[in-house]
Each structure stands twice: as structure tokens, then as C-alpha cells.
Image 1 (cartoon, rainbow, N blue to C red):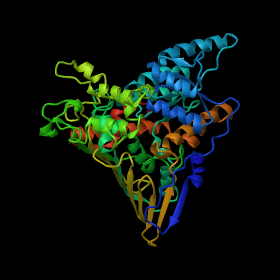
Image 2: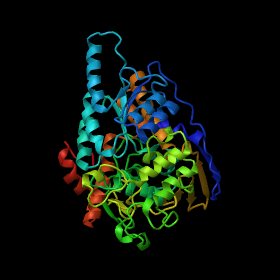
Image 3: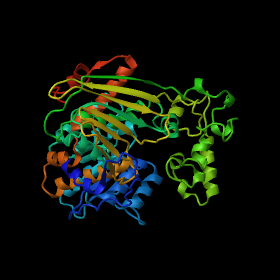
Image 4: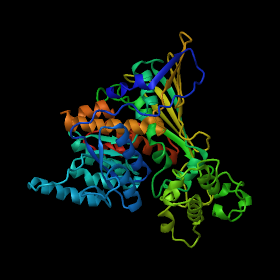
Length: 541
């Protein structure tokens, strides 16, 4: 990750002896784009939802790559991304627009055959893909595209089951020597966390770390949008919330406490045990206010507009949060009505939004129909959600070549903060307190307090979205245009190996098994049984 450190001098300021909050510094523009090569790497965006749109925008704004094509079944989303990043006001050319990854796969096989036969005017292909489809589709896309030998950036999580993760690992492992792979663990790439790791691991400002406490505050209304009414509400159709929401928090802890100091060099300090407790505490029928009666939809609830803070009216229509009356037509409003910005007047926008929120189901509605879509007007106490809204994971490490240590992750829904993570690290020489905006280092020996204010490059995970995109594209460019071997580019720009990706996801599944079984798992024993048997050796634990 040496290339990432070069950004720190631009993205950080420090003040000695000042432990008080300072005004945040928001960098309105990212650092200068890397120099474009004569043949910049070209990318296909698979899935033109919010994440696909974000990555496409990041490729244009901060990288030395090009968005070359889009694959998306919904015409509105496909054309929206295409107009913004590929073909502009014109029409898509050959090889620029696909209904899905399968159509692209068939086209690319034929394109390569035509090019190999010497046919003239064959369009240029793509060098890599950004996989931004629904979580449960990741396996089919990546395993399906593996024969093409493309660079791959897969949105997190890798997959919704451990077996799917292992299958994807096996599909990608043969190409590690020639291709770049990255996962959407964007927390590794924010200026804040790059500096945090430097202070803790390289500068050793508190010596050996004894314990860490990390909190992921999801946000009281954000949780209802995504994990009660939205895509990730039911683990039977997607996955547990620890995976869909907090897998990159687990990854962050393992990056700080388990991974070698230098990417690709040395051995990891592997965990000893993992345990977890948690449940669905609030968003269930037993907690429904009596005054709501039998209402199952917020638009018909007797509590009225101000009677329930979780009301869909309050979240999507009202002026207090990010509703339409607040002038917002982006997330989360655009998730309810995808083409909201195309309606000509505020009145028409509101009419379409109300219509969508009024949609509901009853006891006669087939379960398959309920599970097949989102119901954003549904009462949060009457939904078909079952994922945890409060969960704690505890990981311990044994004394080996490094001292023993313990880390806890708390994923909690009922918070004012929305995804503004905060952490405490306790070491032999001091403490570090980090809260997404600043990092405070306290030294036991001297009593000195240093406060660092990493600049917020962007609001997308503190700049992590831009950082990941920038690093992935630069790694691909080095391989394509500068004769770098892929493992070198992987280490220096991505800073994360395929083995680490599998390990961090496996840790999530182990934690869930521990929670459901109410037990403490021995990591090595669990790994060898659940994963190791499927590998040639167990060295990837």
C-alpha cells in the first residue's frame, strides 16, 4: 500500500496537545487524477444501481481509466449510466451496452474470435469489470466471467454464503499471477483509515495493541430503509446483516490486527477464537405500538404523520430527514422511485412517490411475491425482516510471534450517527481514539496528546469509495501499460490479497455460527473444518 501513503501529506493535518474537536476540512475536489496512459484501462460496469453509478463517477473523476460499457437489465438505469459516462447524448455503440453479464460474455467471446481472425474495425474490449449486481448474484457473475481473464472489482460482500465465497476464490486463484482482484472493502482506502493504520502498525504510537473496540452505527432510519424494508432485510433471500452491512468492519479489524505490516510480506497473526451475540430486538410485531392497530402500511396508519418516527412518510416524503420535501431526489428517495428525477414537477414526483409507498401486501399474497421486491411503505413492525439490528462480535488472538489481543465489533441500528464509525485502541504505551473525523493519540509516558484531522476527500465512506476506485484502476494501468507483474501491483496499490478477502468473509460466517450456536469457536479448528478441507493446504487460514 506504499502508493496510498503518498496521499497522506495532502490529506492530513495534525495538531499537538489539542484533544478538542476541530472544524472538519472537506476537500471539495479530490487529489489530481493520475496521468492517463496512451491506452488507458477500460472497464465494464455490471449493475447500474447506486453502487455502479458511484464507481462509474469515481472512474471518471479520480482515476486514469475509462468506463467503456455497462450491463444492466433495467433500461432506465442502463441508459442513465451510459449517457453520463460512456456515449453522452448520442446512442450506444457496439460493445457499449448489454442487458446483463451473459450477453456481454457471449459478445466478448465473439469479439475476441473476430479480432483473432484478423477482421478489421473490431471494437476495443474492456480490461476489467466492476461487479455491482445484487449480493446474491456475485457468484454467478464472477465464476461465469472467470474464463475471460479480466481484472475484477467486486462490490462487498463477496457472496452470501461461505460455499459461494470458496467457489469464487477457486475460480479467481488461477489468474492471480496476471490479473488484479479487489473487493469493495472501501474502509481500507479512506484517508482516515490509511493514517490510522500507519499510526498503529507502522509508527507503533501505542506499542503493541492489547484490545480494540469498534462500533458501526447504522442509523435508526437508515436501518429501516435498507434492513427492514429494503434489499437486505431477510437473510433467507440475501444474508445476515453482519455480512451485508459490516463485513468491511470485520475486514478493517483484521487489516489492523491480523494482516502482515507490509502487503504480501510475512505471515498474518491469525485469530484464536470468535464469538458473537445479537438478535432482532426492535423491528418485530411484538414491539409495534398499540395505537397503530392492524395497519400494515404507513400511508394508512392511524398514528398519523407525526405518530411514528419510522413512518415512511417521515423518511421519504417529509422535510426532516432526506425526504422529497427536503428537496432530495437522490438516495433514499431514488431507491423507492428509480426514475424520480424524470418527472417534470414536484407535484408529479410526490404523486409517484406516494403511489409507490401505498403498495402493500396481505396474508393472501404469495411469499415469493413478497420476497421478490421491496416494500418501502410497509410498517417496520409488520415487515418480513429477520436480520439482527444489534450484534456484537468478539475476536481473540493468541500470544505467538506477537502478544495476545482482543477486538470487539458492535453493529447497532438505533443510533443518531449514520455509518460514522468510531473506534478505541488500547496499547502498552497509550490509547488511540478514532471517530471518522479525527484520530486522537494519548501517550501514557509523556502525557502528550496529539490530534490528527484526516481530510474528508468525499462523503462516500470518508473518501474510501474514491480511494478504492483510484487504486484499483491504477493497479490495472500498471499491469496493462507499465509492464508491472500483477502481484506487485496487487500489493502496492490494492494492499489486500485474495486470501485476506476469503479470510475476512469466513470470519463473518464463523461469527454467525457462533451466535446461532451460542458458543465460542476455535478459529483454527473451525477454518480447517469449514474451509481448509476444500483447499490444497490450510495455509490460507
